[in-house]
Length: 620
Image (cartoon, rainbow, N blue to C red; front, side):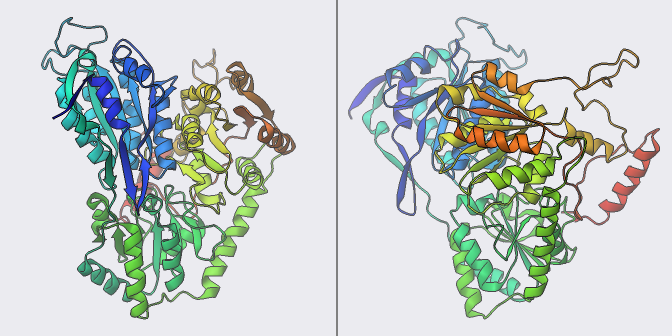
């Protein structure tokens, strides 16, 4: 057996560089490169290996470990999980900064390979800088924090352990049902240790995504269920995109006259212009989608986790409505006591289309009912887009202006605050993969990093980060990386002076508002109730090397959008909007905890309302 002597870190990179993923006969190189920030736990190990292989493996220098990992997640998401970046950090705080991103990846079913440095396996020296020293179990390090948010976790104590660990890692990363964050902890001494690796370990490996067909019995059960229903509704989840099944979804809906609603991850699976496209469903859903869901006798969930938002905390559907779940993951397919088809979305939709056509099935919706609901919502969006106020910019008006300006192939990225609800309801999208929302974890700080990652994926159009001031303040560091890499993004910062989404939620459940607005501390009350903080976000962006504009009127916004389009470097537009001018309601609900006992009467009434609503929710 031929061998080659390499350090463990060198062997890891050489291995990753020869991994491919194949679906439908098309191969994709799995790893575009590595994003990293060097420290004493990785600079002389994997850092040396990256320098040695710099002409073969792209290295992108992150500015914050969480931010660079978010960028890697966005890249993989935009690439439909077929290509990705690995992320490396030092030990201790550098590693722990990536734990949040690991949660984002795992919750959203996105592959993310994390390579945090770790303490010395030899325990010489001991304790090393940034070592935790947990007295009850000395094997525990900071990297054990990754375990609950990883789909596979390993620590490589000897260089030869890399071979089984790496193959297991790729097994999970390439599995549509099991993918998420994969963490390989790399002790800093082991990274540098050499071993005679067999050359076969570095041979080209192809990881095949063989589309899992539905069992004939499962198709029969699904067909029988659908045939007995008059008012089915489809919920399109992110799995529709990852299965490359958007065309099949539309053909299935058209064949049987079934309206399509969408989760945040599924949005853009069908054009808003399509007569069967009713947009977001659930807590942040459209009026038409929510009314259809409430009156449906069958909900067909395709590639959805059936999270609390699209199900409106299990109140969106009639108590006697059946649920048919098509999902490659049994964990997701079994939710809400659904009739399940654990199979690939694309091939399942093809099989169901053929079988239901043979059965002569069609839903019973009239053209007048569906077109009436659709027109009613289109009119409402037009109204929201045209709202004005003498006191400043209205958030829905701003979003309408942006929506009307950008091109069909441009990508928007968002994650947290009040905008995801607005975008899910009112954003009009025609092309798949142009609506990029991280709403599984709704992780504040994802937006700028995610836009950079999406831009790395080379979409056809421009990439826009839609971000609130609160989320921008939490994490904007990869704006600098986008400039460094020459990947222009446009950051549209809607400044409403605080965490206004949660402020709205707080006040909607009985509070007068506390601790959520960006105000100075009042000397009179010793509370955060003074004036709004005067933050110049445009000046901040310019200080980091970006171009920047400010907008206080719609005319200024239109002018800034046009100028930003012509810029060749990352650009930020600071847009001041009025707090509380977002969308809300539309016959939906969200279950949040309310204090059972309170001295505030409004809180007591809110608790009573909660108890009444809980009586309407499904219990499983």
